Amino acid sequence: MAHLNVSFSAHNEIVTISTSRRWLISTSPSLPNSLSPSPTPTSILAVSPATLRPRNRSHTSLLQTLLLLLAESAARTSALALLSASLFFVDPALAFKGGGPYGSEVTRGQDLTGKDFSGKSLIKQDFKTSILRQANFKGAKLLGASFFDADLTGANLSDADLRGADFSLANVTKANLSNANLEGALATGNTSFKGSIITGADFTDVPLRDDQLEYLCKVADGVNPTTGNATRDTLFCK
Image (cartoon, rainbow, N blue to C red; front, side, top):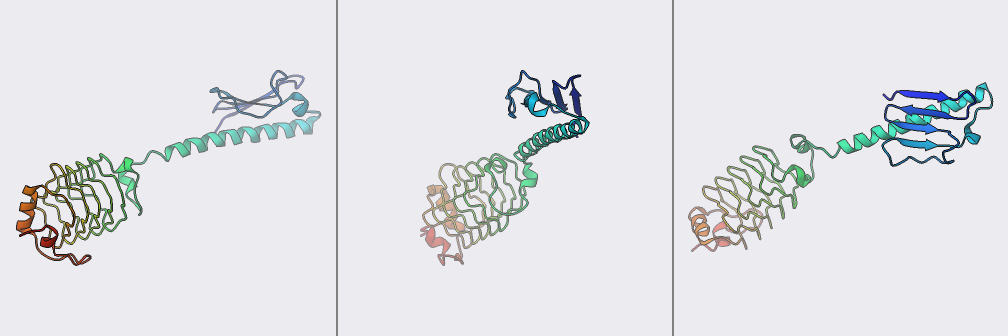
């Protein structure tokens, strides 16, 4: 709560009021006849004494009440500004409650080991360089999401919509990609799918290194339930 200080001169020529938040209201004749905050740390609200000089006891009481209300309003404005600013600082551990895409500041370059994103809509979400070991993305919509240089070791990506997702340089070893749709996804650079489950996964138009393609064809089987494409066919396995 703000502390309020009110002062009147002997002849009511100067009236000031201030709060602990450094707001000041003054009726000094030297100040302009206006009500506008100063850009300096101590903001000044000024009115002319001709406008606010008390004429009698009741007028004085009314004036004091008015000034108190103005000061409280200024203090309340400061408090609201502080509250608004605090809303920009989000703990990643709390940001995952509720649906919808999250801001990149809470998913990019974060340790999200074991987090549950199952069934969520994460279209174009940015997970670049994040640690996503054992994270659960089962059934999530991840169209155009970026997992660039992310660690997805042991992550559950089964039934996920990964069309156009970027797995460049990502570690996808031992991940579950069963029935996932990866049409048009990127897997350039050192991307590794070693030990992953790819039964029913659709790799249509996914660029893969020869060694990765050879490995995936050894374990590929099943048909994607969404596209109807056989996993081996999408990898052009012989």
